[in-house]
Image 1 (cartoon, each protein chain N blue to C red):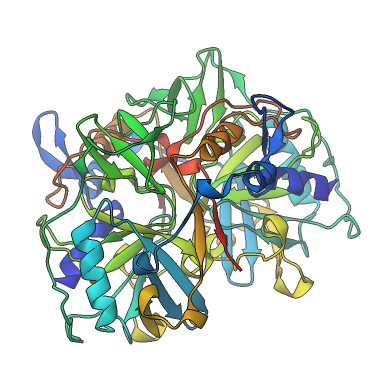
Image 2: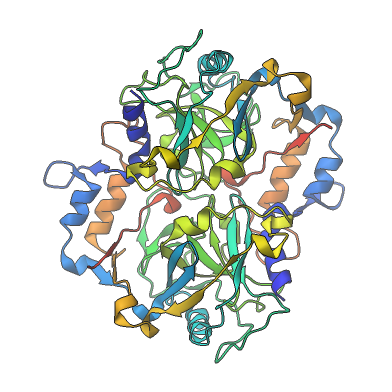
Length: 294
Length: 294
C-alpha cells in the first residue's frame, strides 16, 4: 500500500498522459520521445554558466532575449573569473539562495561592470508567447517564450519568478544591480519580484545542490559565520570550457507543437491516480523539458 | 552595495508596510504588535504533532476543521507511537518530502486505521473564508479559513496545497490513505493535488529541517539505500507531552481585522525597495503569522 501511495503522489515526476488529437493518450515520456528533432533546440554554450560547488555543479541558462545587457555582463564577469572564490552567502527558506562577493573582498571585473540599467521587462511586440489558457494571479497573460516562463500585460513582457529562476540582486534603485550578485528561487514563486528586479535565467541542472543549502539563521537567511558559507570553486561560460567539460543540452522549444502537447498533458491529468483531472495549469507548474545529448 | 542589494531582495521576511486606514503606513511587525489580543488564537495542543528528527523538531498543526477523520486517526497513531522508528523515505526537489513506514516494517496502530474515506473537500456553507481579491489559476475563490489557505468553487471548499502544507499519501483509490504516510510540500505549490488527496495540516515550526533533506536519487525522489533515510525519533501529540515540552503557539486569526491588514500590506508593497507595488497576492504567497508565547 505504501509504495502505491507514494508512487502515486510522485506523479509529477512520473508519466502524465494526455489525449492525443488522433490517437490514444500518451505519457509525457512518449510525447517527448515522439518529438521531431526540430522541436528541440541546442542550448548555446555562450548562454550557459557552469558554477562549480564542492557538492556538485550548477548549470544556468542565461535569458539573453529578455536581459541582453545583463547576460553580456555576466559573460564578462565569468570570463574575468569574478566569482572564483566567492560564496553562497544566503539561504532563506521558501525564498532564495544567493551568492556573490563581500564588499571587502573585491575582485577584478574584467570588462564587466558593477551597475547596469534595469531590464525588468521588454516590449511584448515581436515576442511569440505560447500562452496558457488559465488565469494567473499576477498578470493578464502568462506563457512561455525562448524556453522561459513569462508574463505580460499586453504591452510589455517579463520573465516570471518561478522555482529555479535566477535573478540579479539590486539595491533600492533600479540601476543598482548588474548580475555580479545572483540568486535562485528555491520556494513558492515570489511573483511580486516580477518587474521589480532583473531576472537573468534559470537553472537547467544541479538545482538540488542549491535548494538543500542549510538555511541561514541571520536576518533574511544570511549565514552568520563564514564557516556556514559554501565556497564557489569557479564559474565558467560554456563557450570557454574545453569540449570535454561541456554539457550539451537540448531544450524543448516552447513554441513547438510538442511543447503544446506537454502543456495539455499537464493541464488535464488523465493518468489513473488523478480522480479530478484538474484542467488548469499555473505557469510555474509547467515542465520545461531539457535533455542532455550524449 | 551588496548588502543593500541583498537586504532589499529579502524583503519578504523583512517588514513590508501598508497604508493604515487612519494613519501612516505600518510595517508588518507594527501591524502584528498592534493586534488586539483577541485577534490571536491559542493553537490547541490536541492539534499539534511534534515530530522529533535528529536535526531538530518539526511541529505540525492539524486542520481538524477540514479533515476531522484524518486528524482523529493521526492523533490515534501518534498515541500508539506508530511513527517512532519510521523514516523520511523521500525528498523530491520542488515537490515533497515524505515519511512513513515500510510495508515490511509494520507497527501497532493502536486505535488508528490504515485506510479512511477521503476528506478532499467539505461543504462551503458555514465556513467563513477571508477572501483574496485576486484571480487564482486553480479555483474560483481562494482565501483563508481556520488559519489555513483554502480554495472553493462556491459549493465545496478545500485546503490549498501551498508550501509547508502536509497531506496524507494515498494509492490509486480515494479511500486508500489514512494519514499513516504523510508528506510536506517543499516547492512551488502543487495545486493540482487539491481535491485529489486529503490535506491534513501545515508545518508551524521546523520547516527548514524538512526542506533541506538531501534529494533522493531514485524515481520520484525516493532514497535508494536505507543509509540515506533520516530516522524519525518520535512523533507525539502536544496534548500528551509534559507541559515543559510543549510549545505554546498563538496564530493570528485569519478572520480578524489584523489579518486583513496583513494581507493588504502584502498585496500593495509600499516599502522603499519595491518600484512596482504589485497590487496582487497569491494565496500561497500570503504570510500566516504565528508566535510563540513565552
